[in-house]
Image: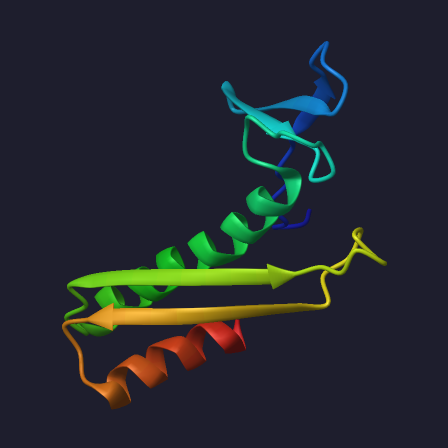
Amino acid sequence: MSNAKVETVRSSSSGTIGRAQSMVRGQRLVLDSSTRPQPDALTNSEAFLAGISSCGVTLIEQHAQERGVPVKRLEVTIEGVRSAAAPNRFESISMHFTIAGVGQADAERLVETYRER
């Protein structure tokens, strides 16, 4: 028997073209297409980027707590660049970490831990 963790998300039509609803563990998330002219909800691309940046926040916070590193506040800003010629893929993604409560060396080690995982 495997120790693999299985996570299931079910996405379906919402009744509005360019909008889907996803359900996971009783939580509902509405996402708009990134190509929708006037998105009202988070777009698929924004949700993708939010997943990456929030992973950075939670992973670093938990690692810092386990190691006794006194992080007071953590913020990750992520930016994805897509061209008009290929809007279905990111040309680049950059992340900026702001970590309060620790020195530069500790901050760099914490970010490196995120990059390694």
